[in-house]
Image 1 (tube, rainbow, N blue to C red):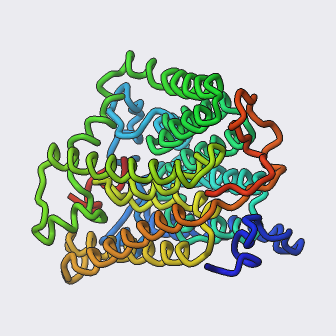
Image 2: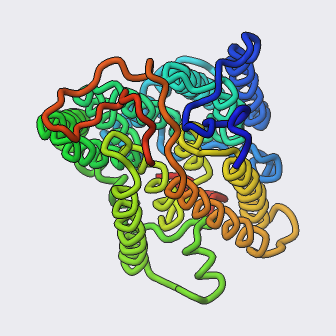
Image 3: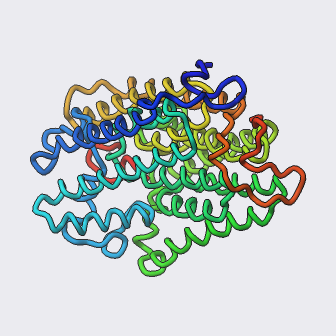
Length: 442
């Protein structure tokens, strides 16, 4: 385990003392620099208004922000879902539509659309840092989010930063005992991407374990109603466009950076989409059940939420889709919950290896460079999966870091002797990217 004085919780489970004042403000400056660098890097490929000669691959500057503009009729004024099906949940669709409206008023078109979305994503990434600071995460841990390569590489690759922010907000509200508000944030997060939905049952279970069924019902109810308020009107008025996300999720095969694609390449498991959906669901459900059983024994009721990290990591291991920006989902949770820096560093290194090898592989498949096969990408995918399993093991084995008392000013109403509020003083035991749209996402 890394030295708790520098990188994480101390032996008693509490985070290290406050950092020097300069380091206290460093995460903001570092994150702003990282966001500007990442956005400029991708925008540098758009100087001519588009991609030429495969530069999006060998220049590692691909972005779904660009592909969507050309592939979904945004330049022609089509309205997402209404005029053109869109393979994203509604909150992302709203961001896409609003920024497209603004971009069409500019002569630059796709360049304006890219920059407007990159700027909004940067706001969401910065706001996520603000929430982590509100949780009194030490400045050195904040740098795990502010200085991490995934933020530089993926903040302007897709639209996931909005869902990441909403998930972190939902966790924070839950820790403050505001479970109805946490339900609203989780419901909105699920309306942007599905992964924040994993938090909802954990909060419900936590409150039931604390003998507080009212709080459990409030959280579940507000989450469902919020999700429905965003989705139902669109599902009624444009059912075909709204359902595109779910249809694509069911019909697509394994993406290149998954264990399922590796198994197919090795001839170990060649599954059609129906069988693949079934196999991935069974694999996730089996592992999730084990995580929950072990987690309930090793975590107090108030710490039930911390099982979100191993559940989400296992979901990424077993899912048939692993787009590069999915790594952003984990980074804030790693900063909050990992007992040491070793697994985090390994995760970042593996992630960069997958990113580099995947785009090289896809560029070669598209005819831009000599083809060297799937081998390097497959090896990187296997290593990253191993690191994710290591993260699961570490977070299940070690005690959860104690949360700063100020992160939780309002505890839920107690209804039983075993109801432990989040501010309890004792420590908790705790086919590819190349030419098509949507190949990196959903």
